[in-house]
Picture 1 (cartoon, rainbow, N blue to C red):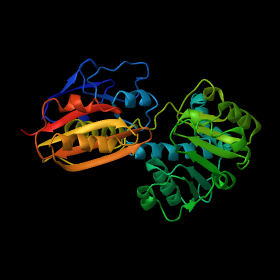
Picture 2: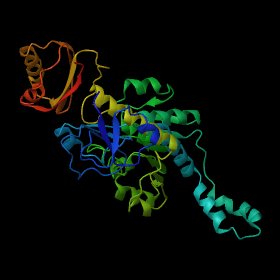
Picture 3: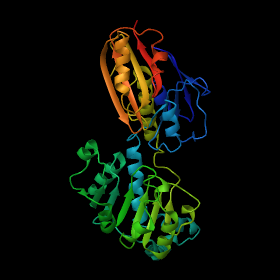
Picture 4: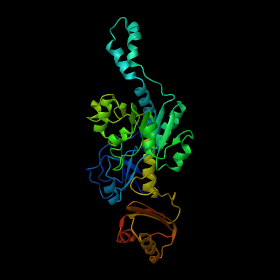
Amino acid sequence: MKDRKIFCLNNIAKIGTDGFRSGYTLIDSIDEAAGVLVRSADMKEMSFPAGLRAIARAGAGVNNIPLDRCAEEGIVVFNTPGANANSVKELVLCGMFLASRDIAGGINWVRENADDENIAKTTEKAKKAFAGTELKGKTLGVIGLGAIGVLVANAAISLGMKVYGFDPYLSVNSAWNLSPMVIHAEKIEEVYAASDYITIHVPATASTKGMISAEAIAQMKNGVVLLNFARDTLVDEKALASALEAGMVKRYVSDFPTPASAHMKNAIVIPHLGASTEEAEDNCAVMAVKQLQDYLDNGNIRNSVNYPEINLGFCETEARVAILHRNIPNMLSQITNFFGNQGLNIENLANKSRGDYAYTLLDLSHPMPHDTVERLKEIDGVIRVRRIVENK
């Protein structure tokens, strides 16, 4: 197999980078990189070299990567959904405990009165100010039942909570893993009306931006607790600040500090610690490296956010070629006709589309002529062609 160069834009856990096969080299510049590993570094304004084939985000969110531009340039972008799910789940549970009982206020009171010789006695009078309620018997609404949402919902069931779940795009895998005790809400309004606590676990997209709006808050229980461990942009911060001031929302727990949330009354703002555990960073790094290497070596795509998933396994034929192209009529027939006209037999083929883009991966029974890649690029709509495996 070819030797390949990888550029790490952020520090990536060594347990992940140690997983690269012999022949992979970590380099200090993106200029000659075939692949990039990244965590939170902003890539939106970066220019990419012609040889860059893929970017793997060691984490779930990809709002730091220009996905559309990457798709146009034939750069496949991966993320690692589920790798940090348990880490985020545990912090969501922590957020619920912090919101239900004024634990942070109590800790601050102890620190402020550390010099009081009678602090033990004084505590018995002061602690009433920090009393709260139990989670058991309360209702939690989970919006978004992906890897994290499912874990949160199941954990809340174990805590004795009643749980409503809402996700119009619930995957089969999530459905299998979800506790049967979770009540499936047909409409998001059901979650708003029923829940004492609401936690959001949806991706940040144009359609979800500001989804927790003044209108949405008005449909919630008075005194609801909102938890946001997904993205700050999901919440209309102006509307939320007003609701907190009025007491319509009792607490807002967020993992995303912004100038607005940092000043909100009754807000508990955590400095983006959701995936910041050793275990989560290791899991994300390992998963990102495996996906990046499998794509570069075998052409297989798993967990891409801008191209469809395809897996033909390890190539055992004479050659494999990967074609990134636009999702337009007649593309597949043009590609297969091209190989037929060259007298090249296709032994295995997969073709899938995702939005405006598509991917064709095929195995050939004979080696390809050296000019095959360049001639395939001449087909209108083809974005990038890669000769992945040439066994002879």
